[in-house]
Length: 468
Image (cartoon, one colour):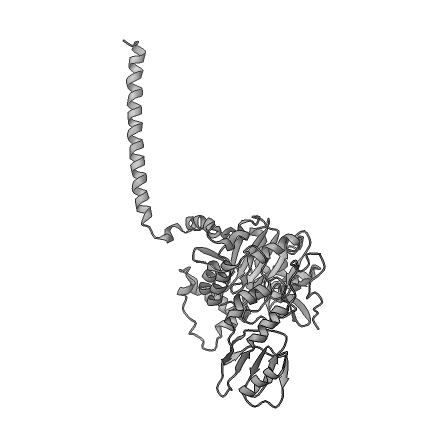
């Protein structure tokens, strides 16, 4: 029927096809077996994949408070979070769950004093490039050497034992002292990892970032200018941006520090020992290159929401950061952000007070410091007398009795914080006149369009601050 050549070819081709089919069936079967096994593997076997699939969930349409982040350009901002071994296991998850709940993992860089993994996130050792000649014989690095030695064989910081070899060591103080060596190095490392960003924000692990406010601010600034913005503090008469309030750096400023003046961090290593703190060192390094810190307080703010002094001065100001945020406070703030009527609008101080703080204010509270310090009333001998003095002063909004001193708050409202009584200390008593407080709120001028520091290139309500 077929020519001889075809009779020879046809059976041969058929045999190869049937073999291929059998091979395909085996491959498919193996795939399904492996897939079933993979389902029951612990998450730790697939850390990197977990991070990749988790990323889109952080911009979930179910969380309207994430909408501002979802609209932000990929290269607009990198957030650098600085922590330390003694706190990272506690504070990194809190940041991820609350302040940075919407922020992409790919635009966040974590720095510590030990390289490790926490909740699938890589923490970079900010100090590993410091030469041994600087570390050797420097007691500031005693805790660093101990951490490195203990971490051998494990990547879980929470498994590191407490230091019981030397009862005289204050681990918290030692970690704080070591911290100052990180700042310039982590800026260099961030540039090397993410040179494409327009802006770089450095915060502490207990800083809360109001992302809608920050993302509304950045487009009003020029990243091509060498800008260093912070809440100004002073050391030895020199201004610097307070690290816990957040330090905002433009692309041009970071390029100048890292590329145009290559080797800045290594040049500063030997000079840091005598400085108080790393945020001061960073400001000094920028200053050497002609970049001064520009005061952006109260937008960049170092208070908790509970210790903020709400006044006519800051009432209409936008708010980007808060500091010393506990786990409970972070949960409360994230919940508040989800309830906001306009989640993409910059948060202003008046909204934080009326929609968050005001419901927490009681009539009175013992062993509490509401930071009333406007008027000291002489001749007061008891808490009831102090309350009466507030009632007699038409301007008094709140009062504080310290056991032997009565202070009235006449132009600021503060919730405050607990007063820890020492042995022999007297009871503190805080009160608030809520009727007057709400009258004061109703008398505040209606806020006009929001204005951010230096959006016009020159102006900030705190720009005139000087260090003596």
